[in-house]
Image (cartoon, rainbow, N blue to C red):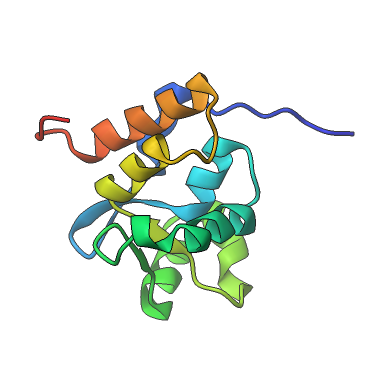
Length: 124
């Protein structure tokens, strides 16, 4: 049985976290918005690594990961994960909008809303 879960666009601000004094979204939340597995999203990023340089995306440290697990119950599965999650900045989230990864308008709209919420005081 397959569930067709669609993200609630009104709740996208719940996907935004402060890490290293930057507002970011985690790879697993972006994957959820796109309706794919996290590993599939990260594979697509690695295939297009030139579009996601270090200022656009970075990997959490073990200490940051532990803090995230402590602060948010929904990340309990990361506690024993062998890989650390990636965090995407405003520019990284915006790259998903212009990348040809998924052309469904509702997905592009949700990523645009997320990018706007990552930069509330910038003109986007």
